[in-house]
Amino acid sequence: MANEELQQRYHAFLEEATEEERNILEETILSLEGKRQGKYLSYMDSWLQAARSWKDEETYEITVRLHKGMDNPMSMVHGGVTATVLDTTMGEVANAATPEGFFTVTLELKINYLKPGNGDSMRCEGKMISKSRRTVTTEGRVYNEKDEIIAYGSATFYVIPVTDNKLPTS
Image (cartoon, rainbow, N blue to C red; front, side, top):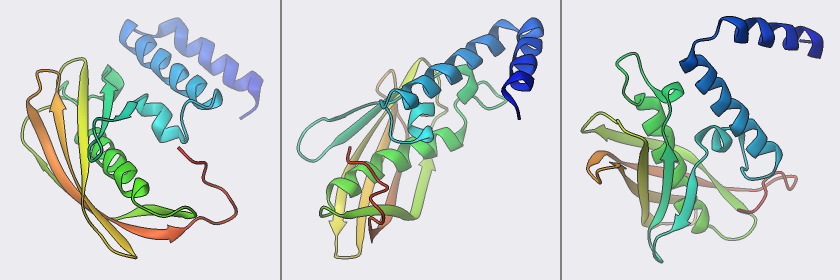
């Protein structure tokens, strides 16, 4: 789509947008700006706008600020968002366990949902369970802002070599 056509559609949309739609659009633009500025490695990371850190030597933590664009029709966090946060957190743990020149991709992901995700944010903690030459197995727990567990899961990641220097280091 040409820039002019995109701008016309954007302005037409804004003319009739609800406050909720404008808020979601604002979140989308913020996420794209963050990707462009190098704050995030992928568009998925930019969409999450996650704060990331190692809580201790074993535990990686991601906190995501929630907005209406992440909700399902029942006004709670969509299960796919929770799954993405779990996969991302556990994937970071797996990648930290791989040698330089290698990266991991999700081979298997198992999730149990316990409570609906509501509130302004959710936090996920991930840890490594086991590691071999070809796979890394991790576990993760997602908490709401009241620090109640809302989901937990495990994942196995396949270790692959980085090709063509396409993956930046985090």
